[in-house]
Length: 202
Length: 229
Image (cartoon, rainbow over all chains, first blue to last red):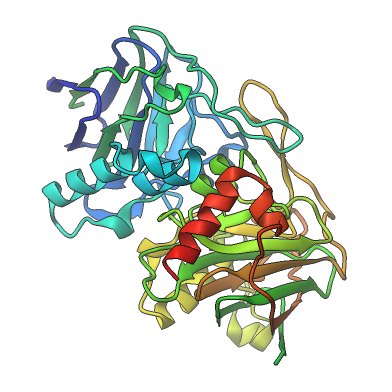
């Protein structure tokens, strides 16, 4: 049963719940759009997605079909069950006004950024969710290759219009999304665009 | 004024480090690992952000003269030197499930082996922090290499650190360092190794400091810390 079908505009955010056994699909409607995403146990927000634990437990840095997203307590939160993009980043973090200044200079301080969206959505949700709950996120549709000599770069997206990723909720999930407004690197193809979110109960 | 403190393997410790003091950590045994969190002392909501640190300096490892950055774009500390050119920051710290066999205080007394998670939480709670404040750690003295393939396969490099290997951090603001000396979670040997910590005053970074001249991003994070100090 479909329980969610919305379009999230460029630079906008979304927060909501998907029940255990349900599915959650993100569609990159126009291609090369980074979707910054955090997952929480809906009943215990401290039991949240952990990028480092997920990477280590699967022995690989990128996420794709078969990747189990685990929490800080190693509880499976969600599994990627379909992925027409091929790989997704979870090392690059989310952009912030402050990290934008470090990366690009003082002139970008008042540009829009994902962590501001995360905070406003978290506070809209309430229930005590705040900055302490913002762990390191997933960047769906984003390409951050690692090299054997220890390099890390942001490269052109591997995504394209209509590509999607679908997850199965392994427990009741709270999902927090920022549809990335970054204009200073190729993560959104220099032109942030809308995404579609579709949710199904089991 | 200098002070030195030894932390046994499998233990945890927290230490405030004032601005422009250096914290030097030295391996006393082979195979040491230090899983480390860093907070701004005046407002611990500001803390080490590993993704920001790595992407700003385009690195998948921690190495001198990189700056360790807070989520607020400020330099917490600079890695002013190390005998090793690779410290892991992308594979997290050990949990109880990574500790082989069963250990307990009743059986092992003070040789009771704790996971990094258990030790870090014990220290965080002392400062009014807790599970919500667990973010990616820097794992000093450990190396995990990407294969460069389609999955980004990661391999732990055994025996990376020998006794005598060291790393030095210069605080760029007043910070709280919270660390565990439990082995790296991917280390198959699980042989907790002791480290020696020492603190001493050091000069502030000048205009030609290697951490400032490393990259424009590193310089801007130092600048952000200096203008708000």
